[in-house]
Length: 124
Image 1 (cartoon, rainbow, N blue to C red):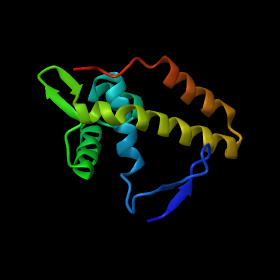
Image 2 (cartoon, rainbow, N blue to C red; image 1 turned 60 degrees about the vertical axis):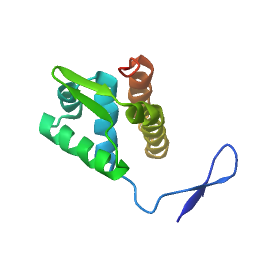
Image 3 (cartoon, rainbow, N blue to C red; image 1 turned 135 degrees about the vertical axis):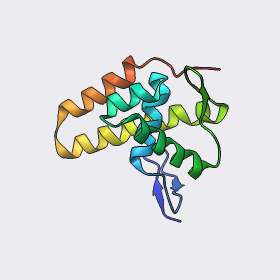
């Protein structure tokens, strides 16, 4: 297992041998924040079925459901609520880090603004 030093504590953080793909994490974050697979698809410029596929892959990877599929919408399960904040913060941190290296300041502002303005995910 590979590890990285935690930037604030200097402690190694073990990394799993295999991580879910970035598109699945982005689809989950957008769907959880918007409360809709359709709105997540529009935001990510994907089809609704592509978002559903990515989320199913993430659920398979985790071995648990992240959403309750309702007649009119979705709701985070306990597992979904447990990982939502970490995934959101992780994606924002990745965006900020890549932007600091690439020198594209608008990307960081857009990510930060989206995270600050985003409503809390739907609750049970």
